[in-house]
Image (cartoon, rainbow, N blue to C red; front, side, top):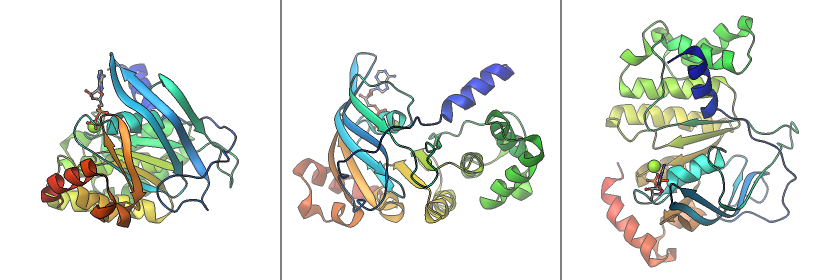
Length: 273
Ligand SMILES: Nc1ncnc2c1ncn2[C@@H]1O[C@H](COP(=O)(O)OP(=O)(O)O)[C@@H](O)[C@H]1O
Ligand SMILES: [Mg+2]
């Protein structure tokens, strides 16, 4: 991969969101009315290669949300993350992106994929290259990269080749690289899907610590235990539609769910650890 391909690939994964005027409508789902909206989807549909991957989605993401997207394979979780991140175009509907009231600038977002996208470079260079691509001055890059690595417990491995790390360490490196950019929103697509229980716990711990400091987190997961541990709000998708969008405690109160979501929950609860 050439340097410009690399830059394009990393930049594609870290776009900035454009601003828009705040909407008047309140959010669905969790108790978020007091927090400012960051992204609002209205009747959003996405078509991919002739398939309707999302259909008529209404969803507002608020600052400080910890939103879990759950649903079977092919239900549209990844597409919804990519749409929120601005990586796929809408077929119909609207997507509003709002400036942060505190800073009047658009929120910065970063996305992590199921398999971390790492370059054949050292651990710290994977972080410092992302900082370089985002225009962080050279004098700041080293300290910011090491700070981010410390944050995820990888500072002692800074000189190791990134691709020689274990799966869990690689995912923590991807989290460090995202965090180093000081994002407002973190999109995570099944970040622990291929990890053993110990590595899963470590990655969850990092995500939890980022959320605790106020980062807005949207997480696609198959793991309902993970949704319980990390999320304050859960959206259940089926066939490209958001069927349920509830605060986490209400989502796991199955009497309140429509039958298809109850069935999903029963089927998946065996896999929640
Ligand atoms: N690049 C693509 N081309 C055509 N169809 C796609 C593409 N990506 C996803 N899809 C389809 O869109 C639907 C939603 O997929 P996806 O968002 O990946 O679901 P999930 O992440 O929940 O497994 C599925 O039917 C899937 O087959
Ligand atoms: Mg997916």
